[in-house]
Amino acid sequence: MTKLTMIYWRGEHFWLGKLLEYPEIMTQGETLEDLEENLRDAYRMMVLEDVPEDHQVKELAV
Image 1: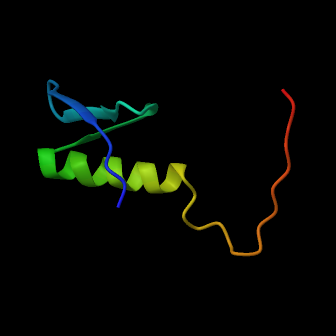
Image 2: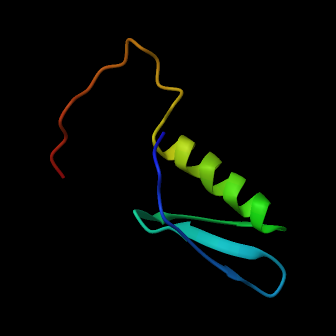
């Protein structure tokens, strides 16, 4: 299990938060519990849990 640091605050209408280790992941929730679950979901999508076993990897120069 991976543990990450959640930064969060109460906005005007929702709880807002992001992950310290992945600042590009930011979301909101009606409750603090919703926010936590939304951050978990966003992280899972970010690390691509649904990549198939037979995926390929290639280095890309940018």
